[in-house]
Length: 60
Image (cartoon, rainbow, N blue to C red; front, top):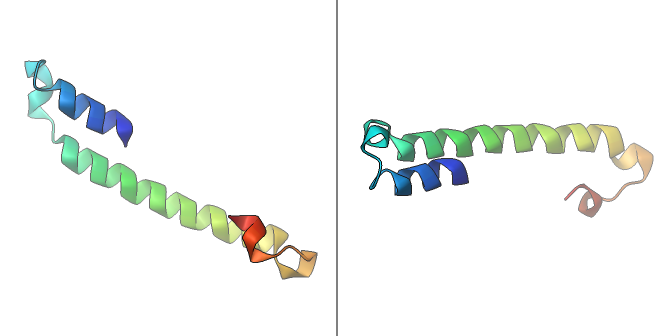
């Protein structure tokens, strides 16, 4: 996400970058991150959930 934000800022000085929609790319990166994070937490709950005695706070 920071990559797209940085390139968006650089596009003011680099004309070749202006043809890309960095806001859209940043939104997509955030959505992808959120999906992967949700899956990561679900896998952690499955692997280390209550049957293993791990409290939910351990998963954060």
